Image (cartoon, rainbow, N blue to C red):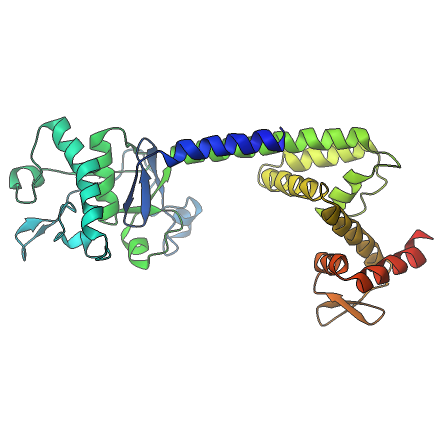
Length: 334
């Protein structure tokens, strides 16, 4: 897959994404048209058996919660979230608060009222005293469906669900479940599969071109880094890299590191940095570099805290670069 095709595809996807309607509820952005799924939420205070499955609830099919909304005795109204005075809207910033609630009304409340031909005013006891929504692992909210969108809004607004990695401590405590966008999960899986395929294709192309005059592949693999790889037979390289790309846990990360390194070789500066890194690695093995106080020195000259940092310093500093090259030629190349 070429970089141009990937960029074009990304821009097109971005334009489509930008046209979608979005609603901010609590700290979660709902994208109208996407489907959200309830998944277990890890509870660090739960017994180890629960933590193993990242959950606060027993993983038994059908078990869950039935929730409604609160009637506020002070204002004598149901806490619908569709009024400026709704207690659950206290966290909204004063600036833009009315505009935000208008979005809730236009995109969530009105479609629900039109669909069910019902009045959901905050003083309609007949509706709110019977309204409830269900929460359970695996439940899906199709936001194209007014009822699902309505339920998801209240689950988020009341803090009964939150996204994975929620930063708000109060939402972390109150939520027993997490939600995720199924579309985003699928998109991420597709992107990772594409990156793996591109990494394999690029690797095989570079492997075919590998010879005494073109050792780009060795430079990339050393940068990743893979040690003692230079000079290995092509079949060994093939088996090694395909195994890394197909690893269940780290396959994508390996593919991404390979592709990022390949991109570096396309610029003279990037290629020079990688070549200097390779030289420095060999100087380390040959014990020509001194490592003290977590820093690398060559002939008393400070290079950097890491080998990659030292390579970057050598690219940007002519004196350091010449020092590294001279040390390599005197101790390794000859």
